[in-house]
Length: 116
Length: 113
Image (cartoon, rainbow over all chains, first blue to last red; front, side, top):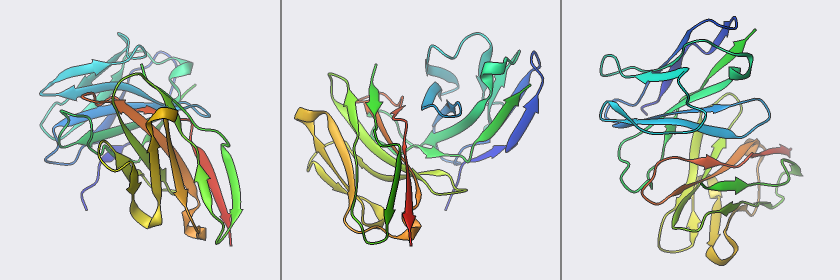
């Protein structure tokens, strides 16, 4: 069964450094998402991406964040200058269709980001 | 924006007991509703979803959920749990026509053999 994959599984970085989290969505999917979960809190939506552009972003997704689909298979989340409060589990998800929102989002295993 | 509430974050029960997890959402418009499950060491995966039709939906592994529009609820049930149902269960909602999922805080369910 096709799966969403994410690398690395765990990333440790120092405050102020740039990090890139990588995701490979399911190959025929068209809609891509990033979510995050700070320890002990809810899973929160960050951004959705369709047709090579951001379709929606949350209040969390400020200028420090960016997303890209550089090569038709990878989907990346970049944090330009990490802060302590960016420490969280970051989940990538994808779905094949999205017009009604009624379709299952397939989640990757997550990348645990630790900012020291 | 939608918000989702789940209570009783930690649930411990014995095999063969019945399970019911509550989920309430706040949003005035039409919604799609989901229950996701995360087994230890695995991805989040979909248990079941509701977007229209029969408000009682059946999912994988014997789970079902009932959408009660008047109560803004989408409670998950399983009549007889097994040890393998030990997992975290997350309720999620999105507004019709929008893919942005809002999650509840989750229920950590432990089933004792």
